[in-house]
Image (spheres, protein in one colour):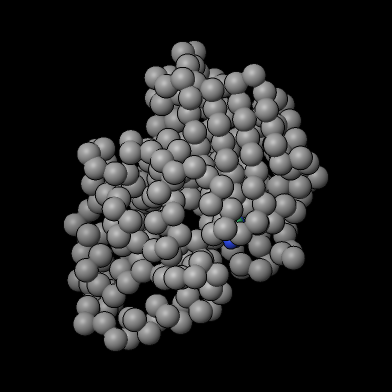
Length: 283
Ligand SMILES: C[S@@+](CC[C@H](N)C(=O)[O-])C[C@H]1O[C@@H](n2cnc3c(N)ncnc32)[C@H](O)[C@@H]1O
């Protein structure tokens, strides 16, 4: 299993460093802030929870539970809350939320929200008067089959980066996410990778940019037409016409990271598209 060590971030919240993935679970600029600014705010959770009677969130890669907690906090602070909140969260390593609790990391949230995360980590199901949370443990490529089609008002897509966890950024997996998204729902992720954006376009989604937070590159928001999205820049659009936009593929939804990377590399080597390095020289 993964070896997790504590990693303090600049907003005072603490996340983990993963030995297996050689990556932190959140941006060093602030784990709590990232959950709010890159996921909850762009997905318009507050607006939807004020105007709908039910709000469904699919949290892909639950981890420490911060994205789920930030969504619950946002909805529970609303003066004009109309919605009951339903969250389905996908995570393959139950030790992550359990260790976050054992280490006291979830105590950055209001006690009632920390309590919800504790129950979820212990029993995988939480039901209150106006909230349900189901934590599905297993490979998200398989557990996604338990999410109804056209169910999610918002999808938080938060795996480790594409080079380290390509399994959850493939054309095939993103197609399954698109299938579970409502026609007016939002799919949000921190990544601005051209390969990921290309996979979203192949799944029939439009893509937009979320202004950069704590780094140079923007993140990505996707939705079906005709939902309006903030446009990506000309420079970002240019990357979509290079080999960087050759997406990750996993036809069986069971390939290893190494297999997915090798297939993409071969496709890039045979491609007529220009390399992205040609573009970088110009910008
Ligand atoms: C970047 S972290 C997510 C952080 C999380 N959203 C949070 O707010 O704490 C990525 C998570 O993906 C999980 N993961 C990795 N591969 C997975 C897979 N195939 N299926 C489901 N979860 C996976 C890891 O265990 C890790 O918890």
